[in-house]
Amino acid sequence: MTKPIVAIVGRPNVGKSTLFNRLVGKRVAIVEDEPGTTRDRLYADVIWEDSAFTIVDTGGLLLTPPDDITQSIKQQVVVAIDEADAIMFLVDVLDGVTPVDKEIAEALRRSGKRVILVASKVDNEKRGYEAAQFYELAIGDPIPISAYHDIGISELLDKVLEGLPHFPPEADTGIMKVAIVGRPNVGKSMLLNAILGEERAVVSERPGTTRDAVDTVFEHEGTRMLLIDTAGIRKRGRVEGGIERYSVDRAMTAISRSDVAILVADATEPITAQDAHIAGYIQQAFKGLVLAVNKWDLVEGTADRDQYAREVRRRLKFMPHVPVLFVSAKLGHGVAAVLVAAKQIFEGRNKRVPTPVLNSAIHDMLATHAPPTVGGRKLKILYATQAEVNPPTFVFSVNDTALLHFSYKRYIENELRKRFGFSGTALRLKFQRRGKG
Figure 1 (spheres, rainbow, N blue to C red):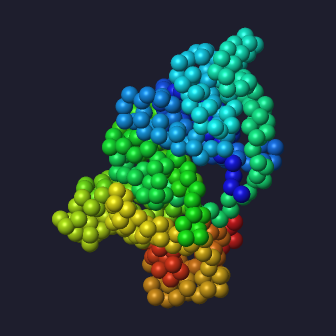
Figure 2 (figure 1 turned 60 degrees about the horizontal axis):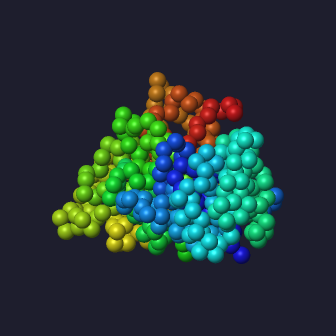
Figure 3 (figure 1 turned 30 degrees about the vertical axis):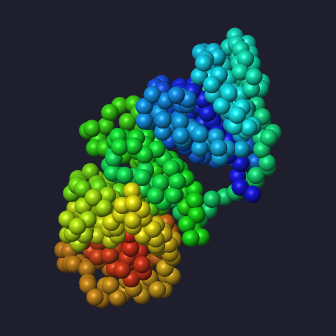
């Protein structure tokens, strides 16, 4: 039995994302007073009365789209409707019944799906009476709500559950979370689609198409993964206000939510300072990293992989352990290798080194390469233990933390990675003076 899916549909700017955020209980979709803000379909789980279902936010539906982006949005909505067990059809009490509402209502009737008619922005008694006008759509009783003010949400959820099979909440423990990040227009959404084998995220030649972080759960060779597609991360000085700023924040949040980040670079350009900045964000968050050099099909035959990889490692010298893979998301080349690398990194991040084995390794490291002398004194590592996994976190008891040189800390980190298979992931090393907590 799979978790029931409920899609939120409606024309642009009727409050779908505000409702989505209210149901999920946190700000997941970007909410802005601008039509067409949500382009891809966003997924999140909702638990109500000890029953779980998946809610899907969709872009504003125009049945006769004027351009390629809105046409793509329409296709996303159609897919969402097709896979949904029930549909929340959102209308706006302030605008009343519009011709587009009537067209959508007719299309939903043809779908044969169960439809819950939701009259949004009903935050006072007068607007409650005005919700009755939507009986004209002949699609059921309108449920008045105000997602912004949390009015009518409990009644709406009760109504939704009436027609859904009971699905007890399940813990997503152990699921591998992968964020796909990078500069705008490097092919992140196309890589997501190549991984999934379907058009889950909107792909366009225009830079900046993906604004939200799009979550997708799927299984690859027995491993459950949560894929998070994100908006392109621009340089801070080039980030505009409003939606653009939120998108960058969302991409940073996606990195923090992930176990492993796939950083997508563009093979037709040299590795950029912004690529290095994003890698730095990933390192600072102590995440795993795979560098996927996309669009390799456009330069293959004229570019040298080894030379490009050397340039990458020169620019990312603070992360020499990162695997560099060459892919063509458009053609599907190299995509499987990216997933394999991400899974290996994830497994390494969850590896625990037994304390006796760790201390024996530390003893060998000290014997092979002794710490430098500082003011006539030398660092002594008295004891070490692995405190956590994901990220692997090691705590060292030393005689004096002031004697630890950053280069020696890097030596220990590199040795731990080499000896215990922590390739591709940042390690967290904590040094504390003996007797200090």
